[in-house]
Every structure is written in C-alpha cells, then in structure tokens.
Length: 164
Image (cartoon, rainbow, N blue to C red; front, side, top):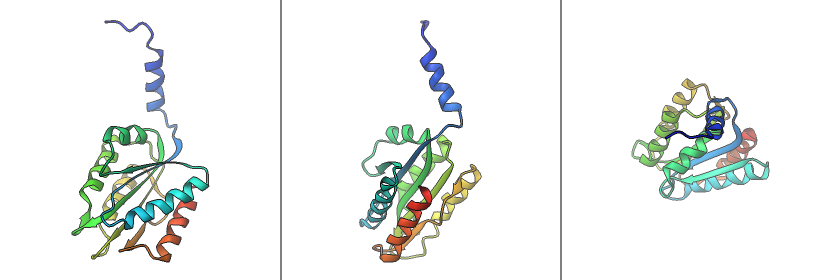
C-alpha cells in the first residue's frame, strides 16, 4: 500500500530527530512508605507554581508506553525511588533503563528518594549514566532517610527553583 499524504509522518520524524525539547519535567517515581511521594509532591508543587509542566508517573500504576511518549521531548527527568535492600526499587531500575534505552533529548536531570538504612549511594549509578548522555545535573538530588524532615522539604523547594 502507498500512503498518499505522508507529510504528517515526515513532520513527526523531523520533530523527533530535532534538538527541540519542551519545557516539561517528567518524574517517574516509586515510593514504598510514602516518603518519596512526599518529596515528589513538594517538587511538583514548586514546579507547577513556577509555570513548568510536570508529568508524574507512579511506576507501580503507570503505563510504560505513556511514560515513553512523555520522555521523547521532555527537557528534564527527575527519578524518584525508595531504596530496597542496597539498591533502588526494581520499578525505578526499569524506569532508568527505559530512559537510557530511549535516549531522550534530556538537558537536565536529578534524583529524589528516601531510604530506611544504608547511605543512598545507589542513586549515583543513574547519575553517571545521565552524564554519559550529555545531560546536566541540575542540583544535588534530594535524598533523605525515612520521612522527609524540614531540610529535605527545603531541598525539594531549592531543586524545584533550580529546575524552573
């Protein structure tokens, strides 16, 4: 079969292969005891107040196809995760893998999350991969032990301001 009006397909392809990004922050996250959700909510509020479009994806309930579509042209990704044993939650690993496989046109990235024990060092693995792809770390990630305290909340606000 021959498609006699391919211009819209060519326009999509031109857009996908261009360097153009939308002023949008995609936040895929997973939270085991709601601590990471609290951080995500604070960050979302700060970004929304600044007029930035935010797309939240609770990784336990989201559709990977929808997440993939939002990643195509977003400028920023903030990965949120709780720590499981000595590493990120498996759903966050899947999201990080998806980001790395799709190689979106990211300009900026950061990480937020919480842990119950250990030191939260797992997050640096994803940071290293983003640096390889040319994305710039906007600000140090917001990592807190257990429920976010006042410092973590303030750090989320500072991250939101830096992203905006």
